[in-house]
Amino acid sequence: MMKIIIVGAVAGGATVASQIRRLDADADITIYEKDRDMSYANCGLPYYIGETVASRDNIVMATPDTFNDNRNIQVHTYHEVTRLYPDDKKIEIYNHQTKETFTDTYDYLILSPGASQIVPDLYKHDHVFQVRNLEDTDKIDQYIEHTHAQRALVVGGGYISLEMAENLKHRGLDVTLVHRSSHFLKQMSRDITDTVPQVLEDNGIHLKLEDEVARINEHTVTFKSGDTDTFDIIITALGLQPNTKFIGDALELNDKGYIKVNRYFETSNPSIYALGDAIETFYRHIDKTATIALAWGTHRAASIIAHNLFHKDREAFKGLLGSNILRLFDHTYASVGLTEALVLEMDNIAHVSHTQKHKASYMPYSSPLSITVYYEQSTGKILSASVSGKSGVDKRIDVLSTAMIGGLTIYDFKDIEVAYHPDYSSPKDIINMLGYKAK
Image (cartoon, rainbow, N blue to C red):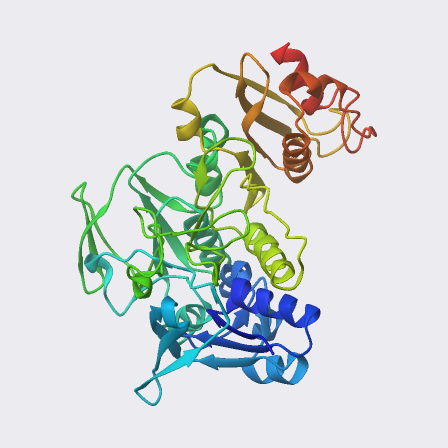
């Protein structure tokens, strides 16, 4: 019987455990999870705080008991793996409830430790929170409920900051967002995200751009600009760091602490695999490494790891494109491929932008849709694309992602036959227009 230990649950660990059980009814599978909860809809957490998701039960996917009953997989929460002994195929575990340390052995070890929000000492106060897991979400929800919080400060300019600003507003709070730059969603083209500040302000979010928090004295915040204000609750989202300190020098990490894996999600030790937010993998369409904390790659990795544990015809990962999308009030922003900063470091680069209505302009509720595509000028190879608008963004980003997977160039876009109906597109869709303009 194969003995498999998984470090970390949630999306990566719970999914790979389920995939393994689907392929082998007899494998001995154990998950050690350092936090309280083992499986929940991480991407839905802000929407529970904003009361779009009405019931907490809707975002809880499984508990240790249901996982054991339904899949015969042992899950130990509040159990933190503190050290690896790869040569002995052994790990050290600390039980946070009993305060005891013990060891366990494995045939294969799968690491899914995830990543944590970066929290400078400045923000370590009782009314300052991050949104990393369900436990954090419960604390925020209960704090707002019990203190009757009215005024919120959100710090940062990425996905979590924008989602939390929107959902706190939906919750009825007066929301201010501070961002040290004026560029939001930096993985996207700046010309596509330039509308974000206006969208926020139009929906009642107060903005402090190109400013930072300098001091927090109880509920009084002093900004670097010299302004002061008071807030009942503060949410920070200042970037991620991988939870890999426990690995030490047992495995090869990159210079930022991410676990290096190959095309099979094997680490530098062939008996240890890794997946999720804590790994360094690679882009699909260009020879560059990638650390992308998105759900699709984690679920794909879980399937590949499970397959390769039990099949001789090993399956290899083809890489990530980093397709992503965000709804912000009545607008949507999406991108695929390299970040704009990475593209601008390259040579032989061109870009094309176009804006037109997402469907026939004479139809009710037609609205502007904008796309920017960066590509290799000599070959037309697509490197990245960003899209924004009120409607039709998801359709176009998925077309762009599929085109990149299929190896289409920007010059092929004029030949993509988009299904036409005046309520969905135009005879020359915006995708086609990008191809015409590039040519």
